[in-house]
Image (tube, rainbow, N blue to C red; front, side, top):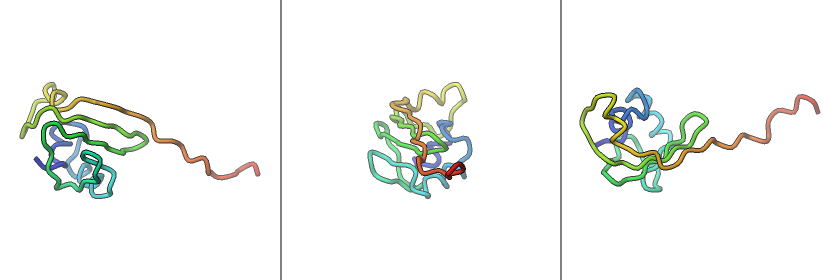
Amino acid sequence: MRLDKFLKVARIIKRRQVAKEVADQGRVQINGHVAKSGAQVSVGDEIMIEFGNKISTFKVTDIKESTKKQDAEQMFKLVHEELKPKDDQGPEFFA
């Protein structure tokens, strides 16, 4: 299954177009390699997503072409989630 479709069907990212944009910007990795939206996802793959202020890592546990909302969580397991470090070089208002 394509990466962008998996992210949408699993409801990790709500819209497929947003999933495609995130992947094509180089903010998604599959098994440690930067992946574009058309990359193939298989059971057992680890997907790392840098989205918003979070970095999340998921393990693919199932592939389904479509699923109900309550069953979507069975397609992946959250392995790790962390906040991105804030930029320490912010504007100096009080310099």
